[in-house]
Image 1: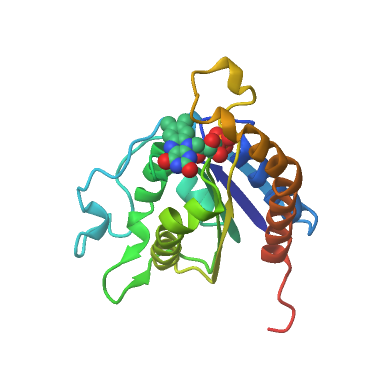
Image 2: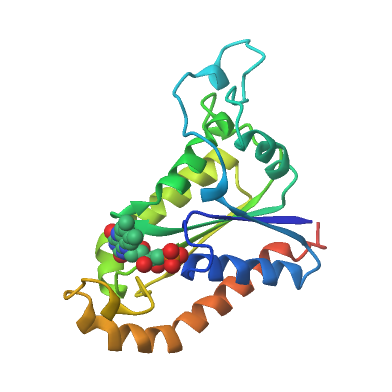
Length: 219
Ligand SMILES: Cc1cc2nc3c(=O)[nH]c(=O)nc-3n(C[C@H](O)[C@H](O)[C@H](O)COP(=O)(O)O)c2cc1C
């Protein structure tokens, strides 16, 4: 069993990384091999829209012709049983690192019948962190995260997919050091959230990692 996590945050020790590591700990608790990839450290581009991966009768069909740090990752994810994609919300969207990674999954999208060229039945966990509180998340992001889950499930022909959303995270550890008069009044609430809710989100991430890794012995 191989379980991989991709961190879309440039911060290696931020909230997203913590949740992804928890998911991998959960997978490791079920004896999975785990791998954490910091997308920001990869030298890669987004999809170039060349459609080589869709070329009729072409040998590049289902494959990306770009040669960069994503190239070996295709081989690796094709061996994985579960993939966790984690990203902070930046400007009401995923980060540019995560967007690039998702775009590069395009070779797996199969337009013959909305199926997938991905060779395995993989489980997908999507993890989001955000400064927004629960109410703002429902208003701004719930629908968006559902759409993302649906489209990534199609691209990857996912056996299962789940989304975990962690709200009200800290932008920085010390708000007095940045110019953020708008955010400073939120610090008390965010602090409570950090100590009471975030640990629960970590537990949920751990459980998702373990659940995705437990072998189905009924088959
Ligand atoms: C450039 C930038 C844009 C952001 N935009 C949003 C946003 O649109 N909505 C939101 O809720 N939080 C936004 N945030 C806050 C981050 O989503 C939040 O702090 C996140 O948990 C950071 O994750 P990390 O600790 O893993 O880096 C933004 C942060 C940055 C740096």
